[in-house]
Length: 290
Image (spheres, rainbow, N blue to C red):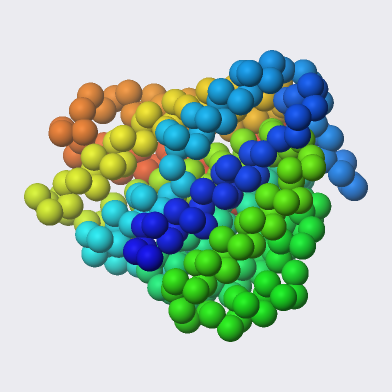
């Protein structure tokens, strides 16, 4: 099992399975926070929702691809680019927890990609806590946690364990209608992958060998359009509306880049600044309407 394929097995379920909805005719849109449950209200067309999530699966790859590009081009690992596990204390609302579940998932993918085994345990525990607080039972029970410990320095085995964990997440969420939450998880994971890439690549001078990384980062413009379209279904929620507004700022910067061929270091720095701004607001819990 190669690195890209194994990570795909882990990461696809995070999107595909968290997005799973019941067959009920009422499809939720907004996200309301309460102490004991996640209430999703508003009716949207089932076909519209299904269509949007098909786009998520096919056109918004989880960060494994962009992270694998970093790894293959020998961009140095930077642990400081990962979301500090202490920032979980900033996740006081369900929508914040959902987005950070995606962010921490991308961080875990980064650690696995670079075989930073000493970091994996802490991130798995953090993800478990978020999953538990989001009422996703059994995904990280003691049996599964024991497996993480057993295979903590075996990349392929560890990847399978993570995959199995998210299969359990699927079994739990199939019974619920958590479409809005799934959209935030997908957005968080995509954003963190782009953040890590621009953050760690920024110090690498543009060369013929790494020019493809500029192209990969530029191509995220298309994924960004689809992320915004996906979230637009839930824009009446204040949290989602604020995220969309910030993503539109990033879009504006992308629009200033006319081609991946002429994208340069200065443009990358400006783009990174906008991406970092939104990402840090999310992990620090300081976005105004959050």
